[in-house]
Image (cartoon, rainbow over all chains, first blue to last red; front, side):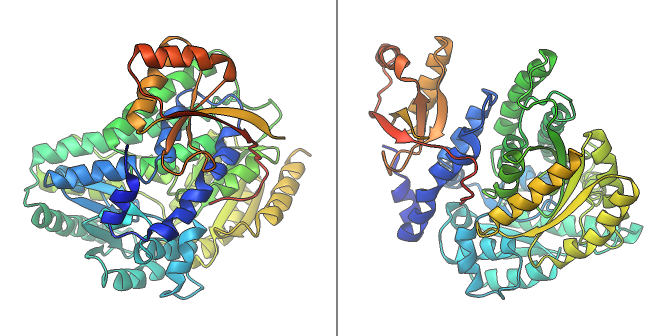
Length: 424
Length: 86
């Protein structure tokens, strides 16, 4: 029998505490996902990923390490996976999306830190996530103050390389980011004992671009008036993209898209014609944070797009794969990543343009601007988001939340009222 | 409202997927799902199946030498408005 407990024990995990998360996952997954009707058959792959979320992929990472490979934990979509895969390393996203991990983070971080950071630190320090235990090295970045200081604490427990993300997007900042990527290249080469060649980097650029194209294809299906998939299911796919094997994920997502495109062709929809189409924008929804999608989609709405790190910011724009030298490839990577419009940049008018563009592309009836509690960057930028959406005549609701269940009913009331308003 | 739901359990996920694929070829619908904790704390990946298909599933598993650990049934309700997450 597959013995996950032995694996977790060997990783030094706190088995008793970890079991508390294992206890609640099946019911929560059933309530949120399996209660939905007419799910695409292709979602069974993602069901499997979650069903053994701390077993299958961690086993693969350990197998990779047994063969001499290295695993790098990442926390941000600015960290270029292409560099890591080019040294035959594996990049695994480590962002925490559960309240279960937050108390562990609050032992060392201020309470008024965003729950994503607290959960990520808590998952490591409380030893309750195998991914956090397996990674040979973490790669952090200077996106926000909370993360900057969190890396200092984490680095006392695990080797952490921090990339200095610029705060502006001038030409000199793109150049600076290219230099940071070169430093990362040297770091992962030293860690793995392998040199990045133009050929290897070209392969990994194509690998990661392939994943981006599959996700774009999925999202294109959500632009249609007859929706072949719910936003809840689409969110799960985006979340799994952060840590699943890229090649397999791309194949399975493309296979799912074959099914979705057939549904569109056949005029099949998982929702009724009059349902209100909602776009989300804001802070990321790391796995297993399913709260907002569940509430929206059981309150008369359907989520058609996420302008978030767990959404369009993850996959829009490809790395130019025509470059032939490592220096030119790194420059192309830097340019693609610096096109991501995160609120950690100033100014960030590009994000406002993206939100209005996407709201039109996805035919959104309304936009919900979501902010994780204590995220000052996105909360402040919400002023511009909501002002410009109102100018564009697009209804908007601003919400702040965390990972607890305690505000779920209140959110349900507010979201229901917003959807009621959209219904006229 | 609680509904009686049947699950097929396996000792590893590879067996679950093998049977899932064989059953799909025979047009027997199953859903891959996390194993409810009330049934087992060991096996992560199960197949949710319809009671009417149980005999056909057992035959398929036997013919393809896929070992089933257990067939379990529980009263279960999925409430999409439970407002409890993980």
